[in-house]
Length: 572
Image (cartoon, rainbow, N blue to C red; front, side, top):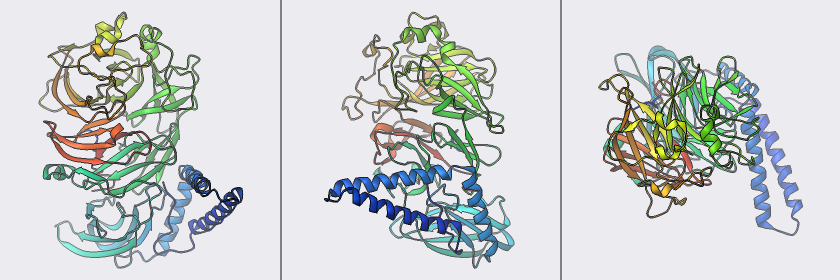
């Protein structure tokens, strides 16, 4: 698997009673009953629809408040203390293991498992529920073979009887013991499907390549409560991770065993393999996140951002660093300073997708992807200009290194000399997303690949003067269902020594004028999310579908879908 390999109320533990969470539930139920009584009193003459809407609104507000509380250090510390107290009271042997469903409130359908054995073993688990394919994984218990077994089981099927079979094997591969645990799967907090519609069932190639990796659904944006989801190769839900608001954009894995993701426009978190939020960091109030982030070589986060204090209200044109040790936010790059001539030539208009209530915004470049390279440079995707931009020394003294795209967008500016030369006859992108860097040993120094989702959509709110129809292959339709429009996966070979880029692969995919993602999952297969259609699928290098899934849209689109193998995190 290529470069990306690597909300919920806490439930009472299966074999412990009288926890603080139980008391909280009683209080919550009482508060909910009071709220319902008030709502009914507000509509004494019936108004069934209004009553239902008000009750649902009240439920969402309470859920939002619950999730916000989960993303606090105090909640995580209390949850951890409760878990340890109950665990230490338990027998916690293989015959009577200690379990707790979603103890940290961070994954609705997960189960914490703890027990000890006399012989060092690994643990493989299988989750079985009638009517659904089994899910099997080898648990990451901290060590390959251990006598203290502490791990997370993913993938309980909601509201079904789940049988979890544990298989213990020693270092020679001999199975030395098995154990079955039965529990009722918790109810999902959201309205997502338990199993997605499979418009193309996975081929053997797709099934083998995906294995027990999980598709992370990043940004099925909702006006109610927002979640990140895990789905397996059969389209079955294996995780529901609530976030505060906005969305998670990708998962990043550091050297300390933490998985980082965004929980709002301000909050970045580092979660451990058991689901505890070990780090909860907020950006300086001057900035909000939008669209993407990466880990640098020191384990700090480099993020695309908006500066809320700007007098010109420019948005989505900053790069900042969040120190994961100190929590300090530092400005690295203002693209308006790098491209002042171009910025001043654009029309002051646009919206801030990180803050839809904001007015008078100037979305002149709209960066949507960042990739950090080992040489300290960064590759940015600028949607509004349909340009890929490489910046040298992003964390030091940033300097424009090159650009890729339609040069005529930059007519009349000094920056056209920075464009790499196109090697071949192929169309340039229209509003590309998910630009991803990769390399392999066969390439010479200074050469690498960039794979991207080409929306093939020609439009820029800040450039009403520009004629996008002049660019071959671009659509100007803002409807994802336009019958004459298609997006594309494109893969470029960049040769910095020659100053060229060459298209080495390209094929059509379902049209999505905005958002969307691509990912190479092995040498012959690619994962593509056509976000505005709610479709994601696996394609071979010729563009033939190997699997395709449809997900119900909460509002308008699914921002990204990436596949993670979770090796070294959830799985061994």
